Amino acid sequence: MLHTSTSSFIADPGTDWRNHLSHGDVVMFRFPGAGQAATANPAPRPCLVLDIEVTAGRRCAVLAPAFPARRPAGHGRAVSITRRAEYRAAGLDRPTRFAIKARLLVPLAHDGFFASETTGTPVIGRLDGAAVEQMHAECARLHAPRDIRSDRAHARERPPLRRERLRGRDFTVERRHPRRPIPMSQVSAARSRS
Image 1 (tube, rainbow, N blue to C red):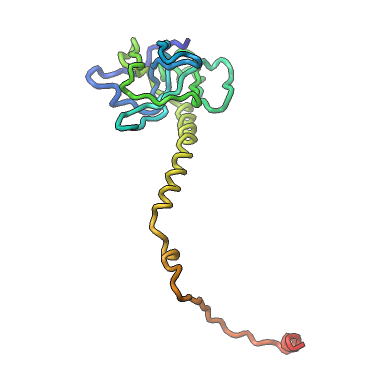
Image 2: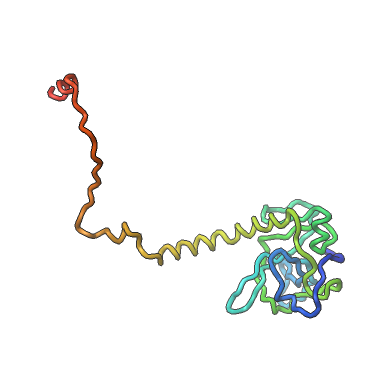
């Protein structure tokens, strides 16, 4: 299991951590493992907050679970933290990778969030350095299909272009460019007669 270390992240006891949670934060959450029953109470593990969304009027976090980075990932969809300074800033004590394919949408009021002993809140740290760029690239891949669908829906709702509004009218616009007539040479005139 991944252990957390003391992090530079200090929570203000007077504020609610849910109000300040943002993408790039690392939180402790009881993330269910593969094959575990829904009623099982899994051990808390570090999870990366990929995004904060509002679903059905509730704020939810998209979480990606952490795994040890001892071996290469089986797929390219992961955010890896291998530099000591980076995984210390994230509140971790060893190289870690966050599996993007195993992400989960969780309401912020979920009781699976586990308060860390070092910070007093579920937030244990934040991504730093190259890992932030990896996370942004993965989030862009996740958001691209949704953005494409949104653009297509918006294109269907847009008002028609001027060209499309003029279609169906019974007139034609002929574009003319005045040119000087080019005199035909006698050779080309003879060829055109034959």
